[in-house]
Amino acid sequence: MPKVDTIRKVIQRKRKEVSAAPAVPTDLTSLVIPDQYKTYEATPGHWEEFLLADTGPGRDRILIFGRSGNMQWSVI
Image 1: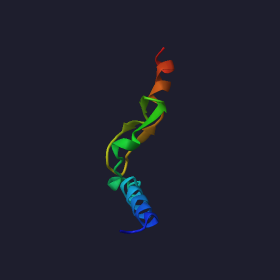
Image 2 (image 1 turned 90 degrees about the horizontal axis):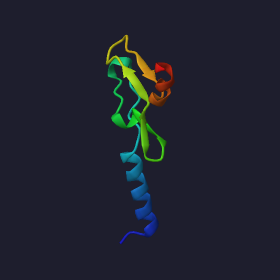
Image 3 (image 1 turned 135 degrees about the vertical axis):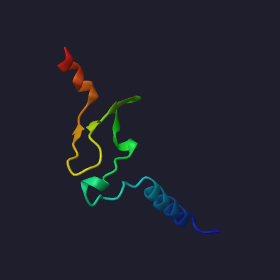
């Protein structure tokens, strides 16, 4: 059996590999934003959108970031 420290290091490496951020895109057309990066936990158990709008892939792509909760005051 391997030593406990060795097993611990292997587990830590695998966790980092699994939860690693996506690779840096070379240009806007190859940018893909995973769903886990489009929302955040504003308060425990309450998730909000962080990416409010995305025009889609292309050179003239527009991304709008913000809090959907902040949009309520502008509607009144």
